[in-house]
Amino acid sequence: MSAAQSSAVRAPARPAPRPTPAPAPPRLRVVPAPRRARTRVPFVALCMAVLAASLLGVLLLNTAMAQGEYERYGLATRLAQSAQQQQELVTEVDEAAAPARLAARAKALGMVPSTTGGYLRLSDGAVLGNPTPAGRG
Image 1 (cartoon, rainbow, N blue to C red):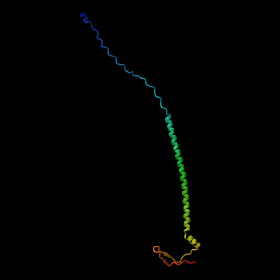
Image 2: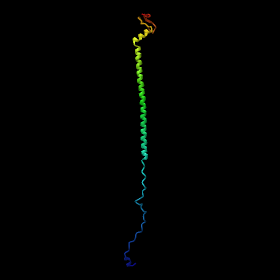
Image 3: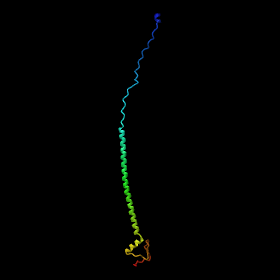
Image 4: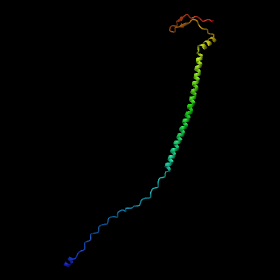
């Protein structure tokens, strides 16, 4: 080789081409269309159904309580009438058991008071005292 050739500046050698990397995914991507917003109709219908059911329940409960109150009033009235009737019967028994009334009824049946008394001992059947039959007059 000659000196002229050796003194010439050589151009830098090109590096071997690198293999190109796979293309990176794009930063932007397509997004799907937004989903439709759920309607509130089923929720509102459910709320209305719960409200209607609760109002119906309150109505039925109120009706049952009113019916029970009518029955209670009827029973209380019957109890008061029974108590009044019992008091009237007790008064009649007390009047019939009064000594003056018993004496008048006995006299009407022909009974006379006894002046002497006698007693009967139940254990042995012995008669105590001096009983005599009562006479008129």
